[in-house]
Length: 487
Image 1 (cartoon, rainbow, N blue to C red):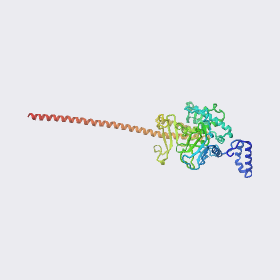
Image 2 (image 1 turned 180 degrees about the horizontal axis):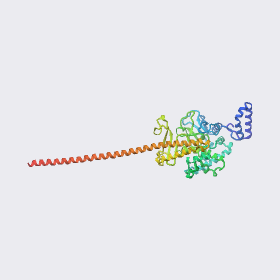
Image 3 (image 1 turned 135 degrees about the vertical axis):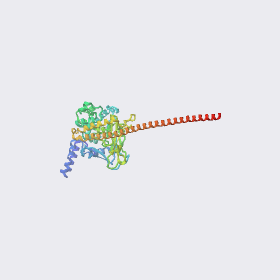
Image 4 (image 1 turned 45 degrees about the horizontal axis):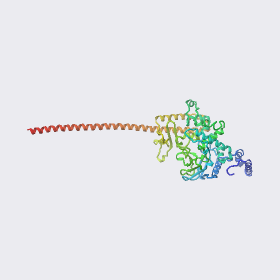
């Protein structure tokens, strides 16, 4: 088979023997030794591809041979050897990215993944509609976890074998929930949580938090084995690569970005025909093709309450700008990059290259907007900066292989919060100046009104006095006339 080996021992053995014969007739010392690890992997496993490129090619070929399956040949999926804080490697565990090999027009179809390629629970009767509680969410996650485990146990006999073997090859420990105890202890008070940690937990640096303990709290014992690390990895794959109720090959290899970087749009993953992805604007050759993990066809209001900390919690990376924060102290803001070429120099023209956008009634349509933080809000952000800076000083506790990502997240939040504090301070000063100016204007208006009243009163008094004098003169003249008449 061109795309994946059928797991039959005799057939595999013949392939291996013929390969060895061919190589021994050429240069055994170099060529044979170079592919020896691949041959060993074929002998010991059902995963013939030995690099990420081979596995991705298998998936693309499989999708293109499915009815209604399509992957645009202008795209390439490559390992991201220059990804920050990640090892430069071409192994199957290296991070992937989707890139344009040629110019792509706006609204051009990028791929069409039919429903039969999904690993999903969309049609299961046991599936629950997600509501405002977490119970339905974790219930459906458990269903998808069990479904993926079945596919992995089926292996090469699965109709989705190319995708299954790719998922099997993924490196463990890509999200905070599977990181070491020191990293979890450091991150618990720094990530969003369902129940705030107690003061005693914070003092001992050992608070439990849904941000890193959700596998233990919601799925172990009730859904997966409490002692099998492979079960934890399957749950992590569902969380990191899934779309709530489905795992979608190829679509899960697009990296996330919002704002000016996003260049795709997609149909709902719940469509019976599958998912279709289009270019939302022109994409130049060499550009990376991005998806948005929180502004999508099925995301609904996720982007309003889900931001940079949640992206880091669920996927293990710090997203590119714009960054969004939705804090419990009724503070909501985004930080966006600005282009000084367009005349935008950031907040108050400070030249920082960023602009802070406060909630302006967009968080929830039926709820009052948070607006700019007041003095108490600014003090809350300042306390948060102190908390994150204290955590940054304890980075030596974190294992070296996790230190890069943890440090990047903490440093990013500190930088963003300081930008927000500076912007809030400026906005508050402007508001106070406007209030003072308004008070001064009111005082001036009152003074002018008093002066007008005084001037108007003086005029009336003078007028009355004038008329009184006129009347007196008339009386005197009348008396004189009467005297003349009498004379």
